[in-house]
Image 1 (cartoon, helix red, strand yellow):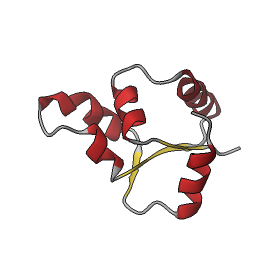
Image 2 (cartoon, helix red, strand yellow):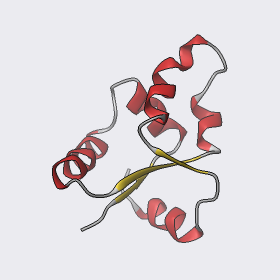
Image 3 (cartoon, helix red, strand yellow):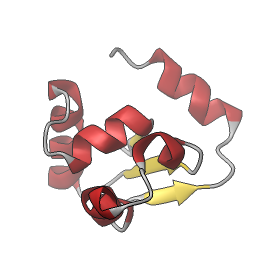
Length: 85
């Protein structure tokens, strides 16, 4: 099974701040254990999470670990919209 997690700016910021929602932690644990799947961040979501100063260090560390997508297909965005928050 392959799982794709799409993070918005708030999700990216929460992950960087080590306080992600429980559902995200559960999905990330499944991904880690299975060794499959990926985490996507639409490039536009970085605008919400970055400040342009030294406070960006934690977010920048996370961005090195995920796939930043400049063009996210509509099918991915629709699937992400269906995910319970």
